Length: 162
Image 1 (cartoon, rainbow, N blue to C red):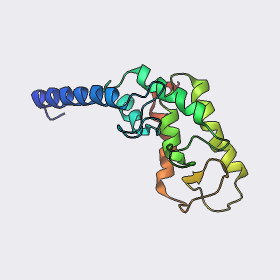
Image 2: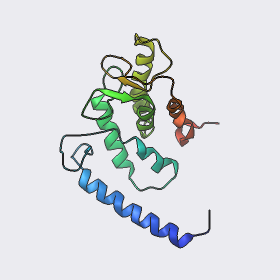
Image 3: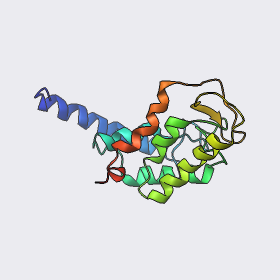
């Protein structure tokens, strides 16, 4: 937007190199690691959605689908945990991760547990974004503006119809 095409290309080139390096270092066969030095770890790669929204194409659709498939396999009654360390998740980031799915049924399968959480939790406070995916218990946060992140699907091409 500033007309700095040369700088844009330089930054984009470096970002592409770093994305490829991340992919190689984080690859753990059927998913990507939480940390490079710990096989068997994993996490929601929720920030990959910005690659889609800004049409950067730093990461392939295969990378994103590989992650989505792994999230589906790790899903609990009330959602997919944020990472391999605990069973809690963040509602907004869960939806961001679901937005990576190519197939609508995968997106819905990742988001449906959030519906179960909201309907079955015994906690009666304004919408919490941080909760346990096995017990449906709120973990401190409530009524935070980050729940606006749930609307990220409105920004993706698959959800904008007519």
